[in-house]
Image (cartoon, rainbow, N blue to C red; front, top):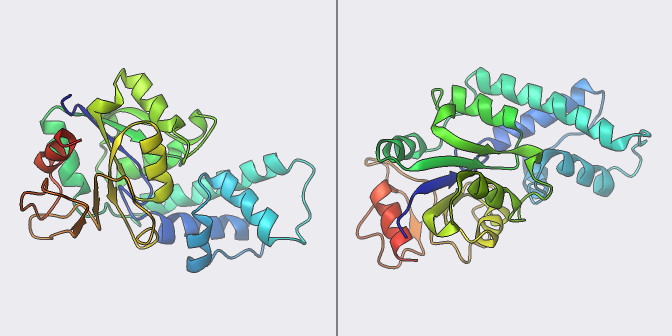
Length: 254
């Protein structure tokens, strides 16, 4: 089946949002709420194993805050705290604090010009996605036919739910899609939904197990900025960066 759609994860895939974006926003939210919690670079890397911001806060409370006096409505407290964090993150994005990863804008333009359909499949909140697309990506939000984000599905990655949701909305079979992810949890989610997947890892995910990925790169690259490719077999055909032609060869080799 021909490749018809690219399904993009957001955090760590479209942009390096985690260390100097979400982590900073969490700490700002904690300070605003009068909490002495400090998510360091290394601690946040460990917490990323938990998908979903509210789930991450709950996990932190349960595993590292034995003396925290839980409010009667812990779920509501965490939701409010996460809302504060989202406000700080979107403010950071609007200040221009987060740039697109190498090759992402180019690939989006190539796919758009070729008539491929685009969608988002992420666990981050819709507000975060909108802020990033409209600021760091020059207002391309309307390029994405479906934006599957946040709590739109009951089970977050590594469950298949978000990918299944997006493909159902688009009326597409997995064989006509290719996912772009950055992490083990993301890869497990897309593979569970039956979608062939390219991994573009980052500093937090470079040591993850990417077994089952069709291609693994350190970034998508540019004509003057080669990327490092692994698990390519013969599909790379001498390519030094990820373009639409490489993705079509990848998809055709499945």
